[in-house]
Every structure is written in C-alpha cells, then in structure tokens.
Amino acid sequence: MEQPALRVIDACKTYDRSDHAALLPTSFEVARGEFVSLVGPSGCGKSTLLGMIAGLLTPDEGSIEALGKPVTGPGDGRAIVFQDAALFPWLTVFHNVEYGLRAHKVPKAERRERVENALRLVHLDHVADKHPYELSGGMRQRASIARALVMEPEILLMDEPFSALDAQTRTILSDELQRIWLETRPAVVFVTHNLIEAAFLSDTVHLLSSGPGRIVKTYPIDIPRPRDEADPALLEIRHDMLERLRAEVDDAAERRAQVAEVSAL
Amino acid sequence: MSTATGDGTGGGTGERPGAASRAARGAGAVAMDLLRKSWFVILILVVWWAVSATGLVDPYKLPAPGDVLSTLGTLFTDRALLDDLGATLLRLVEGWAIGVVAGVLLGILTGGSRFLEDGIRPVIAGLQAVPTIAFLPLAILWFGFNGTAVLAITAFGTFKPMALATYGAMHQISPTLMMAGKALGARGLFMQRTLIFPAIVPALVTGLKMGWSFAWRALMAAEIVVTGAAGLGGVLELGREIGAIDVVMAVILVILVVGIVTEQLFFTRLERWVNQRWGLVGAR
Image (cartoon, rainbow over all chains, first blue to last red; front, side, top):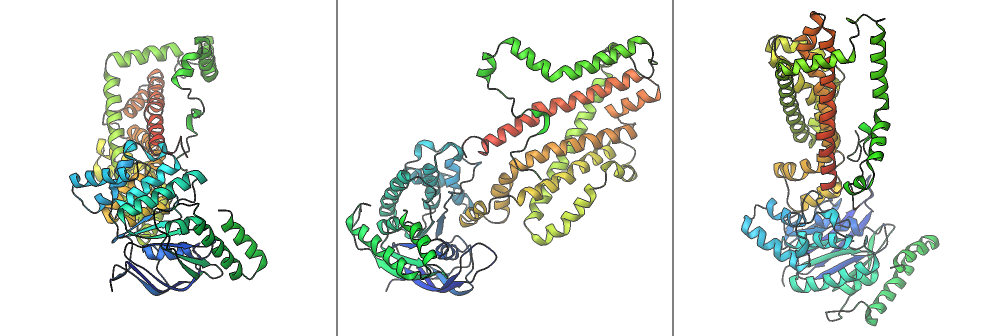
C-alpha cells in the first residue's frame, strides 16, 4: 500500500499555559492528495492538532509522521495558511509569495516563474506589486494561499483560513479552493468550525468535540467534484454532524452554546 | 516602549491637511494657523526686546535680539560658524549612525536568545541610567582630548537607547508572523535579516528619534568640554571665555534650529513613510 502523506499516532496535548486546547490521544491518516477537514466547536483541539502537524507545537505523547518522516519542526513538504493571512506587511504580494523560495535558496529566474504561476492560480497576478494593506481580506487570504502553494507542498495545512471573512467572500474562496485543489492536488488538512464548508471541501471530515478534545466521528464524503455548497446531500451530512455534536455534549448549557456556534455557520 | 503608532512630539499628528485641503484654505487661514502656533514665540521676542531696550539689564547679561541676529549674520558670513556647524553635524551623524548600527545589531543578534538577552539587557539598562556625559572623562583617557572622544560619547549615547528599543521591539513581533516565517523555512541569519529586522522597523523609527536626541545632548555636552576640536560646543565655550554673550545666544539659536529641522524634515517624514509602507495607517 502507498505510504500516507500524514500519519497521526496517538498524539495528545494536556492543557498548558498557552491557549491551546487539550486533546486526548488522537490517531488518523491522510492519504496523498486527500482533503481532510478537522471540524468542531472552539476548544475541541482542532487547532492544537493542526499546530502539532505543522511542527509548531510538540505533542506531549504520541507522534506525527509526514511523508514517512517524524515531524520535528515546521516546513519539510508542509505549508501552512493561517487564519489572519499573516502576510509580511513590508513586502509586496509578489515578494510575500516569493519569501519561502528565497528561504530555500531557489534561483531567481525560477522564483519569478513559480511566483507568477502561483499568483495566476489564485487570480492575484494583477496586484503583484501591491502591499498587503492595499488588499481586501479575501485578497490577502488568496495571497497567503499562493505563498503556501508556491512551495509545491505535498501537505497543505489550513487553520480556519476563511473564518475572518464575510459570508460572500467565504463562499467564493471556498469555491476557489476547490478549483485550486483539483488543479494542484496536495494532501490538505483543513481546520474549520464551519460544518458545511468542511463537508463541501473534503474527502474525509473528522468531527471533534471538546472537554477534552477528541475525534467523535469520521465522515467519508463521496460526492463527486466539482461540488455545490447547496447540494442537499451536503446539507444532510451537516444535519447529521450537528445531531452528533448534540448527543456528544452532556452539559446542557455547554451544549446550547456549542450547537449555537456551529449552527450559526 | 511605545508602539509604532506613537508620535506625540511636536503636536503635528492631527494637523497635516492634505495638499488639496491646504490649497482650498485661504492665505488668511494659513496666516491664522501660523499665528496660533507662534504667538508665544513672538511674545518672548517682544518681552526680550522691551527689557533690553529699557537698558535696565546689562547688555553683557542680555543683549538685544537685533544684536544677536547681526552677530549670527557675521558668524555665518565669515564662514567660521559654518565650519563649526559642519564639524558638529558630521560628528552627530557619524556618532549617531555608529550607535544605531551597533545598538540594533546587538539587539537583534542577542534578542533572539533568552540567555543572552537576560544577561546583557540589564547591563545596558543600568548604563542608560547613567548620563552619557559622565563617561566623557573615561573617553578622554582612552581616546585623548580630541574629536574622537566626542564621537565615542555621541555613539555611546545613541547605542544604549537603540539597543533597548530593539529589545523592546522584538518582543512585539506578531507570533503568527514568526510562525509563518518558520513554516516557510526561514532560519537563523536569513530570518533575522528578512523577517525580524523589517518587522521591528516601525518601532525602531521611534527609537531612532530618541537616539538622535540622546546623541545631540551627549555631543553638545562633550563639545563644550573638549574644545580643541571644531564644533558648535567649542564656539559656545569660547563665547563664554571672552564674555561674548551675543555669540553664545546666537549658537544656542543655531542648535535649536538644527533640532527642529531634523525633527520635522527627516524624522517626521521617515515615520510617515514607514507607517504607510508597513500598513500601520490606512487599511486595518
């Protein structure tokens, strides 16, 4: 059998002084070219899990393997897109996208070509010379996606990339991400608290619950692509996930709060 | 340590109308604006003139404003003061630049390590509590009674606040930005050069201004003591020796103007440019 892109083996994290949520020992695999979402309410440990996969956090126990090698730090075939885009404000869009290539000492001519391709892919070639402060939130997030994709990652990690955007922009970018993924086919780990977004984009959705964080159910999504967010089959899956979350949470007040959070989206 | 948005000095922040609105306002409005900001200066000049005109105060203690102005003119036309001004400015820029580079380099290279910063930072903070001029006798013993000692004092006076400003700025870099850089493969010197340094630039600009004023003070104090070398401080001291109070006051005026001009022409523009370029104004 082909080696998976990513293997998470009993990785766990207890609550520490930082604001990362606790996570019970968790295991799952991501096949090469597979789109996997981690979805759940705040405090379910989904961002903690992604941080560990990115190599920015260390699991207390258990291990994570990316492309057959244990994860000890960031980089190495894994690129990451953050919630707030995290572009370098002093660099133009072009130079932001180029940054990782410079860090990896890619020759200048090749850098130029790869950056231009990446910008075309996310439809930002017309603002290559603009600075981040001149862009809308959606454009910044596109630039951030281009900055990750230009590294030609085998694994793309996305930490709630659309949660700071307005509803229309979110829908458009979600559609765009589907197209981009179909064109480039990296393995993706996508963290979100938006159930429909997770179901729409993914081959597999891991539903997490909090107190402490753990995967409560895994949903394979077999709907052919390109998909439509309004597909009734997706809405059905979303309904099922909501039911599942309701059943998971015992405390009534907490249940109301969590269910309200995820159904608002 | 203030963040990059701070300005506060000079009260200019809220009063920078764009070119269009400035043109739209009449010349009368501009004159009113000027008057509003300069009435107290005018009052000082009038009182000064009136007091010296009564002849109650010895002109050796308080010369008339006109006399000071004509002395200033003479000093500039025979070029002596121009040479001194040039020597002082050159020393100021040199000392300041050395101090800035040394302070920022030290801050960046040691600020990334908890161990180094914890050891070095308190020492610099301690030195900063000592007025720089107190080190002048030491500098004279090391470098001699000459311009080098003055330059060293100027550089040292800049170095301390710059190193402290750099440490402060480094603690304010967004953790997400650092994570983004690391995830893209930035390490070591590349990261310090392409991420940490540019990220602290807005905060450093505030530090530069502070460094400049520390340099200016240290330089003047040192020049007044080390009179062998050319410089405004030497002229001040010479004026005192020969009892030429008009010279002393004329030089003080020159020092004042240099301070205002660098502040307004250089630092205010630099700050505005950086804030715009770093996206600290405009979209947020």
